[in-house]
Every structure is written in structure tokens, then in C-alpha cells.
Length: 464
Ligand SMILES: Cc1ncc(COP(=O)(O)O)c(C=O)c1O
Image (cartoon, rainbow, N blue to C red; front, side):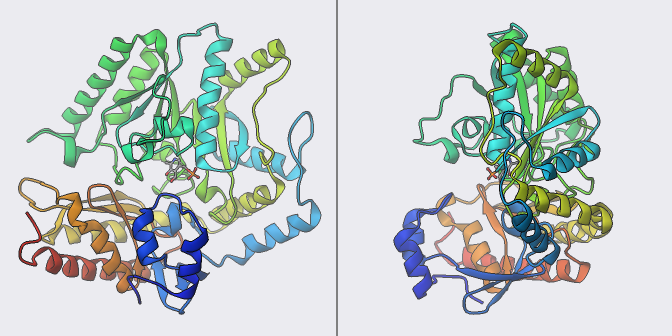
């Protein structure tokens, strides 16, 4: 196993030509990327043949692992049959109709129509545009502000980067700040006050949201965006009663609820959608990633019947519903998505997550005993360890110490790929097909990486 630097010929060639997304470019130039060349089950292999248990399913997406032949065959069949067609101006690839029907039948009640795109960012971007179009149609030109949450992640396009509540997505990109506002993050361990119960914390956050709505003016607030479990912000599971209180406010002030299921959708939380797990009633739901098991790009934005009726009326008025992409409802990812959804149902993927998820969660909770672990959390097959300098005060390490990054390198050395998020939070989101022995192996790598990291932080003079 290797933990980098990886200055292999392929890595050197890559850094000569490739501008990597979401990466420290200087560090990449000096260390080179880990070049992954193939996958099998929940494992990926680098060009030297070293094997890694992919504890993040790539970017929370490879739900069926890295070698599901049925998906490759579905793509190949579709490429032979109809490799491209579009859905503009009265045409449609037939397979897209099947997928739309299937998605609506699986989605939380009330969602009636679906429009497709290629990525989670585009699905959320579409949701933002639909919210604005909807309020224009209703003659509410001022009701346009979108509320995101600190540490929420909804993508990196111009608009979704603005809804995202993580500054590294925004710094120096000059994203428009105008119609985007943010409210508090429901991270009880980090932002709850001493002795504050989850319920009291949730009530305080709801109060904060209400204050924001009233301060900005309810007639200016159009929609609230939330992930059921926050992913990139640090795997934050909502505190008890949080969403009940938030939803009551959204109804009171006539604010649309956009539920971003890009990570939670299709079983990750132990329900088909995070909305079902947490009792959410979305007006708009977005999904991507596990929609195609990550094999080909595709995303979807589902809207309620009431919203659809308004879009319909506005299209009458303007002569067109002027939104969509060349690859909206592309037949190849549509075929892969349909096959993916069939596999989820045939193999009862939700039941599987319910059966094996507790093994991951129990293992993570056990790691709370480690001197470096301040908090361990999660649900289903998503989880995190938050590394802290002082368990008593919950003080974090100085980000410059690179503690989380060191952990990830050591985990890689021991054969598992995990991800370090801001604040030394180590995320776990393995393929949904993972078995209990494989979960144990993943936890063992994490445990060894924790010990290695503890040795690092105990080196004299490092930690201040
Ligand atoms: C919750 C959530 N929403 C949206 C996105 C953006 O998706 P994409 O990277 O496909 O644009 C992500 C990506 O990780 C995500 O986690």
C-alpha cells in the first residue's frame, strides 16, 4: 500500500496536463495523484496493483461497488439501440419515460414530475431556477431568496456554490451573494451549548431560522435547501425534532422545501430516501450519484404536482418552459439508472443497509474511546469520526497541523480510502453492497490509522 507521494510516470503525466477539481494544486504537483486503474466489488486498485477498500464509495456514489456487470451491459445495450436522443420540443428517448415513471413511483408522496440533468449541482441549479420561475408565475417577484445552511453542500456551480455554506467553495470565485442567505448548522456536538439537549438545540436553530425569515421579510424568502444528513459539511445527522420544527416554519411562511438527496437518496440512510427516514415532505427533491450507482453521470429534480401546475401555466404564458440541457434524460445514463433501481429492489438494498449499517455505526461508536476521537456519528451506511485535540473541551487541532489529512494517508497505507473534511472530520460512506466482514476490515484500517495519527500528534512540539 502507498500513502503517497506517488511520483510514478502516470502521476507525473497527469499533473502535467490535468487541472484537478477540489484539490490543493501545489500539493498535488509535488505529491502526484494516486492513479486508480481498476475496480472490483468494494475495492479499487492503483496502477501498481495495490488494493484499497473504497470507504467513501468514491464520492459517496458507487453504491453497487466497482464491478457491477449488469450496469455495463445496460449501457452497452442502450448504446447499440439508441446512443443519443433528447427531450426538447416534443421528443423523448423512450427509456427516459420509463425512468421518470419509476422514479416518481419510488419517491416520497406528492412528487409528481421529474426533469433530468447530469450532476447534483445541475439538479440543484435547476431547483433554484424552478423556484424563481414559480414565484414569478405566482406574481411574487420579490420572493426569491434561497436559504442554505452553514456547512450545507449543494454543489459548485455559480448558483449552487452560493447556496453551499462552505467558504472554500466560494472564496475568490465572486459568486453572487444577493439572493442567497444562510442559517445555522444543526451540528449538536460542535454548536450545541454546554448541557443543551438535542431538542433545545433544535428549538434554538428553528428560532434562528424564524428570525432570519422575519428580518429578511417573509415575502422575500422563496426556498430552504437541506440535505437530510449533511455530507461534505462533516456527516451531520439532524438532532431530534429539528426537521419537524423547520418544516412547521416553512409552512407558516410559505417557503418551499428543497430536499437535496444527492447523497442520501437510494438507501444510504437505511431508507430509500433520507426524506422518508426523517419525515420530510419535500416540494422539490434532487438526486444524483447513486441514481446510476455513479457509473455514468445523471441527476434528477422532482417537483410536486402543485409546482408543476404553476410551471405549466407559465409555459402557456411565455410559449415555452425554457430550461434544459442537451443531455437532460440522455438515454445511456437513463438505461443505467433503470437497471440500478431494479438491482436496488431485487437485492433489497435498503434492507441490506438496515442489516449491516448497525455494524458500521457500532464500530464507529467504539472508536469514540480512542484519545483522538471527540465524536463519532452516523446513520445507515454513512458516518464520521471527528478528531479533536482535547476531548474535554472539544477543542480542534490547528488546521495547519494536518491531523485529518495524516489520518487519511495512514488509512490509505493500511488499505482503505477515507476522506478528511474540514475540521478533521473523517467521513465513511462505503458502497452499499459492503458486507459485515468488510465493514470490520474498514474499521480495522481506521483504528490503525488512529493509532498512527496519535503517534504523530504526540511527537514533541507538534501540537500547540
Ligand atoms: C448533497 C450534495 N448535493 C450536491 C452535490 C453536487 O453534486 P455534483 O458534484 O454531482 O455536482 C453533492 C456532491 O457531493 C452533494 O454531496
